[in-house]
Amino acid sequence: MPAPTKVATISCIGPATQGGAVVCKSDSTATFTLDGKQVAVASADGVAVIGLPRTAPAEVTIGARAPDAAVEAVATIAVLPRKDTESKFTMECGKIAPQTAEQKRHAEVSWVKKDKAMKTFSQPVAAFGFIKPAEGPYSSPFGAVRTYVPKTKDCEGSTSVHNGQDIAIPTGTPIVAPMGGTVLLADPDLYYEGGAVFLDHGRGLLSVMMHMSRIDVADGQVVQQGEVLGLSGATGRVTGPHLHWAIKFRNVYSEDRGTDIWLDPALIMNLKLPE
Ligand SMILES: [Zn+2]
Image (cartoon, rainbow, N blue to C red; front, side, top):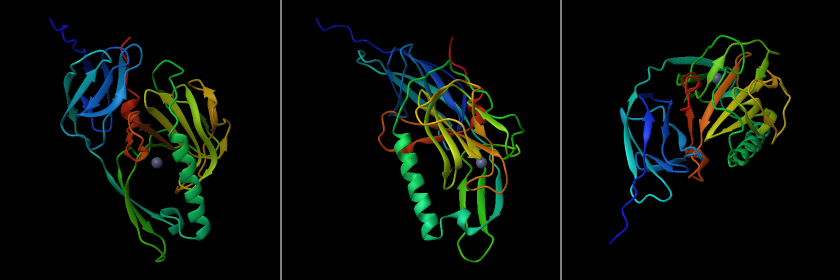
């Protein structure tokens, strides 16, 4: 007689919003799929966070398969639409895209550092839950479509989606870890990001704090929630001092870091894991 077929379990907390995330529980170290594509692995307690693209459809299917289960369990989650704004910025050409040989080299070196850092995945070092990385009002939201208009006729403009949440604070305001994590990259001078800290929280989630004037942590350092990472500033591609806080969801099953997705920090702030 054939052995009974083991089916994985799955339960997810929804609905979610485009650019947010779904928390699902399955069996220990289960593999999760999003619309058929492997995207996350459960921790020992069976829990995983699954990031949703800003353009996710109105309904997604999440699957879970435990290592010893022959059949995948599936859950269908409703996804609420976003209402993003559009805005225009006037900037110097060098801030829209690298123009000179020196700027191009700076951008290339920055890209290589980020790409290398982003290939490292760390385990969670702290309980799950976010706080704001700086005390200040939210300014430009995640998801806004931005058109950069050149100040001079020396270059073309460009349009991009704002991939983080801005917090309006003067230069010199302390920036703290929004959740505990491992510093993957702490650099005072990246081309677009300026002074930046890339902090890996585990579970595929990475915070990036940008435009800082001072960095007080180093690559590989483990920090706890609320620990000071440095001071805010106006470095990199900015029109004035503020903190740009971005959260990236990295797919542990993919080698291609270009397919990772940015999530809306204002939504992720409200995310809770089951007790
Ligand atoms: Zn920003």
